[in-house]
Length: 416
Ligand SMILES: Cc1cc2nc3c(=O)[nH]c(=O)nc-3n(C[C@H](O)[C@H](O)[C@H](O)COP(=O)(O)OP(=O)(O)OC[C@H]3O[C@@H](n4cnc5c(N)ncnc54)[C@H](O)[C@@H]3O)c2cc1C
Image (cartoon, rainbow, N blue to C red; front, top):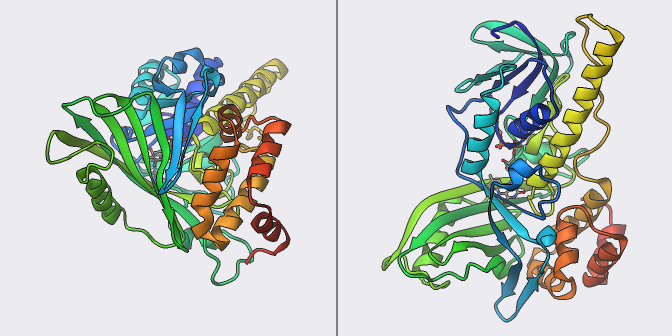
């Protein structure tokens, strides 16, 4: 291709960029796409979990490495279990390595996509001077422009950076970030119960930090054991890695690192948990993925939100291309495409905003909130709520499960 004008530029070939390309190819898009990523190859040190696979295309459904029909929550003195018999409500996991292998095998065969790995391109748009032709980048000293640009490169994670995006914030406003450090553990003996995932094990909290362990047992011999913190403090991922090693070494979950258990690799990350953070907007670029707030603020789940948005955006782009072709438009002017649907439905953003406000005000209460949710909501309603497909009845059950006073207080007190 090697052109100086293409139809679409995608900056960042991570989950959002790749999912958009897959959806475009699936829907028969033939326009020219240029994709750049600063990494030499996709980052495969991730697993993506989500509830229910009904919105996935069949080809992607085949990538599900494991489904759990049971998941649990526990604190010092209580344990709650959710059980479902429906695959539509099951907790599913796709490994990033399988996703990218599938995506690359499909997309690199497509002649209208040009890939540039190892490329940290400079955007030449700026906030106030949007590029007339749409978007443009400098690539190996050459300027390439496009009608449409999608940018998933980088995300708001550092508390300071995130806080700067909060309009009219008070000086000491805190935000919650989710920090996690997880070990892929294998064991010679069959020590894991692969039927049940622990979503939140050993929940504990102080005024600034809510901590729990997330365990995904893939079979009796291997599991992901991840220490997670929702925290208004700056946490250190290397300290969390040591703490996670200690949890494993203590043999708390039937594991014993010194004996027959081995840590194969680590996955870690930091995700912002705040509905007040606005998506980064530069020129005509559409921010996508975590950069575009395509993430549930209260949980950090983004996989299915990104899949649904990619399908919707690809349909809008394909329809626009068909209309232009039918109308015989051959001009080089930018296509005015407006994506009207927000990735996370606004009702969930509103509910998440109140929930997070309660957590910011009284983090020590978090184990109680999640225990109440686990205890009073049945598995199906919980799965639907977590995947933005709750019925009115599910919503009411969720609201009813929560303690009234802190939520009412959060509703009536202004943000500070
Ligand atoms: C370890 C981990 C586990 C997660 N697990 C789950 C889960 O179980 N379920 C769930 O729903 N969500 C999960 N998430 C949240 C979310 O799904 C992921 O963060 C997801 O990868 C977000 O997609 P993205 O495209 O926004 O970002 P990414 O997938 O990170 O893609 C961004 C891409 O941009 C590239 N890039 C960055 N800067 C530049 C630059 N200057 N120039 C060019 N390219 C650049 C990066 O190399 C990267 O490839 C997890 C996140 C992490 C970090």
